[in-house]
Amino acid sequence: MSTKKQGGGLKEVWRKIMVALKRRPYNIPMVALVITFLYYALHLSTISNTTAKIQGSGMGFAGFVTMLVSMLSYMVFINTFQYRKPVNKPMLALLIVMFGIIAFADIYYRNQIFAAIQRPVNPIVVTQNTIYIAYAEYYLRIHLILLAITLVLILTLPIYAKALRKVKTSIEVEDNGSLGAIDISGDE
Image (cartoon, rainbow, N blue to C red; front, top):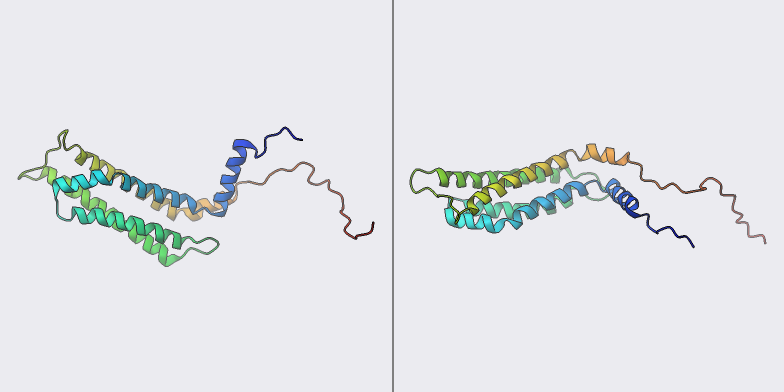
């Protein structure tokens, strides 16, 4: 019996991850897309509180559109990058349009926050009790950055997919070349 640990440890785990990424490199932007959606979804209560406090024109609709299109963009992404099939270009175009819609809704929402804070008549004052307004603006800014990173990962996928294919993930086997001929004739 061998006393070596089966599986190879951390090096083997890293090799298996690299093999999976070589086969399906589109998992990298998919993870980024999921993180972007989760970031927005986890801060939705702060954004909703801001909408209720400011009650700006179209703020609730902008938040709704961001949430809806974010969920739908995940489904479009799955149909864009199918395993062992070429990229579905119309779906890729739709995905880029959806990212534009999300970015527009986020920017519109941020502009409504700035307009409410800077308006001459009855401006919204951000105090300790309404600090969530500042947080909502910050969360939207980070969401836009995450969205841009995801878009860059999608558009540069062919570049780093080629680089991933060049990574050596084969396993060195001892005495690989010293196997003798195997007799399969059935003579005993």
